[in-house]
Image (tube, rainbow over all chains, first blue to last red; front, side):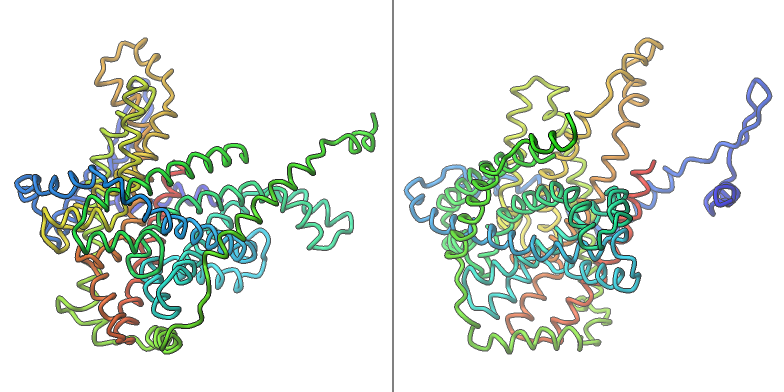
Length: 282
Length: 267
């Protein structure tokens, strides 16, 4: 019933631009809908031109003044090696911040994700309000959260950790409830019909299915957090960002290059390790 | 063997679990001692209450004013930065990702290109913005260029996965049917790639929109600059109106983009 309705319903686009009527050689008649591509391209072009007007984008300036880029990038690619000793401390701060933030954020995300998945939680109002809450949490830009936290908790790593907790919580709970919704609920019903209560059934039928994806989401988020945490110090929330801010303030781009190189190596190592672990999990 | 015997002989990994748990717990303890809670800052609670107050009492004059300082104009500017940045980034990412796919170019070339992509991804967007400000001068223009470069990293990473999953047997059958190279690309490669490319680009647009709100901190246009200024001068109702606009905008864009992406995924 539903299908036939969908077929009979003609989209507004097809009513304006009538489908092409083709009679095939064997006598069949078909209606070929007009391509929507021209319309999409026209809309896109209008949006792009409006955006260029609004932002003042000018490709000529980029080409003409491109040599200016070399002034900073050239120095960044000649890192000052002696600065390495001062980088390690903040680097470990960054790693600690993102590790602790990821762990706490992931633990907090678990109950919310379970309550936000429609196959576990049958209560519509609670489900929708939790999902809305999660969406709102995800809209806060991490740097703004870090900025506000550093005003509330004082400058330092604690503010950064709180910002990372908020970010991780939002991302992991969304990814998790999407994967919880795809699990097989058959074992859960079987356990229930054998006389287990809801919690027991969930614990032994659903948790083993969720756990590998949950851990892999957590690792993925940890990877992202290392990169995000490196910049949080820019607004005073501890870690490498403080150094980045100082180097930029003094216009010492050789030192900045060293900071970025260390970050690059750390991110590469952690990413390789965690993607190895994620492959094992899946 | 009965089920009970099989159950008795199941692989025991108690030691492995024990070691993994011990490592994880020691890592957490190690990180916890690095992050210390020193209590609230001076006037910390005032800031917290101010934020909550501001969110529920946004400055409606600012929220609906149509001047260049108003929330709507800044939001439109932020969207414009994200749109241009995403489109340019997506276009630039196409050649990069073809050059970094192992089934298109020889392995060493792909390896070098992947290093380049990782490099682009590692340099934080704020640093990119500061580098580009020398070229473009402060303003939304800088934001566009920054985002075009930053987006390349993540977009091409996703494009590469799509390119490496290409089904090449289709090309062989097109060959057998007598198609030339252009027809092979048009009918054999493009239909396989467009859906996932567009989906990736829209996903990146979501991220760029959130990023564009913070680029303003270093003077690269968008809503960020005014927001951070209001936070540091503690005008909470203005902060509230900026955040309110931001939340509504991101929620709407995310809703639309999820709709489009599920439609693309289902074909």
